[in-house]
Image (cartoon, rainbow, N blue to C red; front, side, top):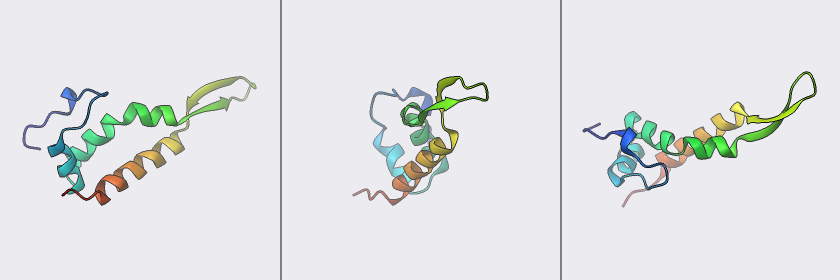
Length: 83
């Protein structure tokens, strides 16, 4: 993807504009950078109280919900209009 490195992104910062533009055009490498950028936030939103077979309750990531959020993010990126 033209020398763009996803590892240099600061998770608290903004995504570089060229990455956003490339992702809206369907570039898989750019989309991967976008998803990685929001990965920790998606995991946070996916946290649920889970009860195991023994009746113990703990916090864990609902993988089904995490995947749904990730899919919604990808659809939103692909429908985003860059002017």
